[in-house]
Length: 314
Ligand SMILES: [Zn+2]
Ligand SMILES: [Zn+2]
Image (cartoon, rainbow, N blue to C red):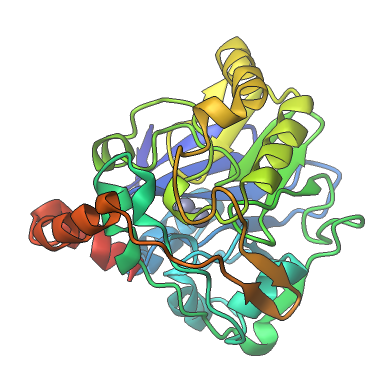
């Protein structure tokens, strides 16, 4: 952990740093020597964290530093909450996959979260997360997956849908560093204790917000095949080396058992999306578990931890 200029962040690899904001990670990536000497912000954290992100940037890159671009792994509110505030300070383009753009230009809302999937307080709180789109207007630029991101020339962009339609991961072949967003995680995201305390546990994408489990499985297989030696994800601590490779291979091989919930709105039928946003959402069936969940949501929302999380993602 690096603690400098009153901000705490951590080193992921050479030229890659991360910071945990409430329960969400953001990353800063500098281009290596020989490449245009610039840096890029990956994801923008929950609401209310712009000051911390700017302080981290200035601590690493110097006073007044700003990125040459912001790249979004996806548009969920916990990864874009501080974006409007950051864009008041930084006049930079924001890159996202074409299938994610409707959620960032006011055209489409994400499908509802699924509190029936079980796993803990975060699942119960998930219906409270903001799912309405941001409208970033002309700031938003579509990623060309084959060509990559001009401001990040060494990194490959990998389309990893499932958790959201236009979810992307970033991979640096030079040292096999992977920034995986929420395609898989290194903590158990459904549990508030795991998420807030950053307890290490390689897991599939958050169950309550994943809308296509067939795609999610394909995406994890794609990432496991890269055999990354370093993985930095949207939630949880950095995982490395053999510990990472063994756990990721296991997750890809046993995805149904390890990652897919036994019941839930999107388990048998996915939500469908086009470049215009969501076009089909499977019908909601209230189970006993669901009714119990909604009762618990009311109770849980009164807790201090709930307020903290809700503030960050609303
Ligand atoms: Zn997400
Ligand atoms: Zn997330």
